Image (cartoon, rainbow, N blue to C red; front, side, top):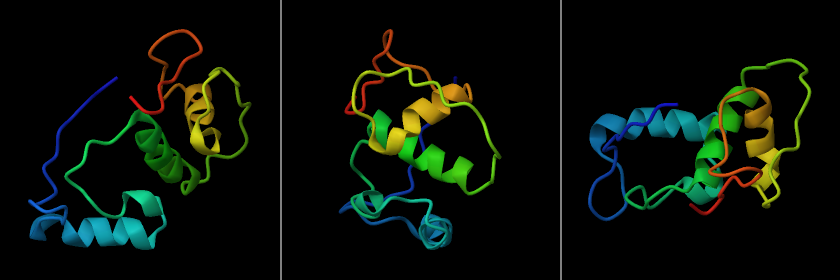
Length: 101
């Protein structure tokens, strides 16, 4: 697992000039869900990260794979279960992803 912090936003929820091109390309490529296309200075949830990661994976044509339905809590678009099946994410406890955490 990895984590990082990237200050791509400016005060007031907009993004900084250096990140503008990258964010706009990601939005045009439909990688960024509509709900995440503003307020860049808010914390992101595990569910939102799962949606972003799944959009990247899905746009790169992974081919077929078996989905393991592991999580009991409701996860948007089954993205966490799909990412779990690929070994990309894990839960915060057994069968619990923590969408809002």
